[in-house]
Amino acid sequence: KGKGKSNSKGKGKDKQDRPAKMLDAPPPDKEFKGYVKSYSESNGYGFIVCDEIQETFERDVWVDGELLPAEVDATKRPEVTFTVVLSTKGHPQAKNVRMV
Image (cartoon, rainbow, N blue to C red; front, side):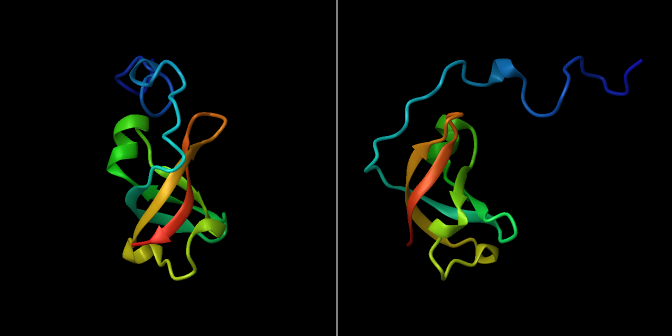
């Protein structure tokens, strides 16, 4: 007597749709290009959209607010370049963020 039509529990994608193993980090000197999708001043972090990272990791790139250049206004979706490291969970995180 559930409310939904699906037998899956929880939100988001099924585990079978996710990569089974931890993906390797890109080379530390490889630069990516994307745009700042959002930034929460109260939380101190934001997200960068990058097609190349999205294809590999199926998620946006997390960015620490202290790494964003001072002139970044996320409401204008500015283009940036950045390098990527992986978190302990294998999620992409931006480093060396610069305005384009």
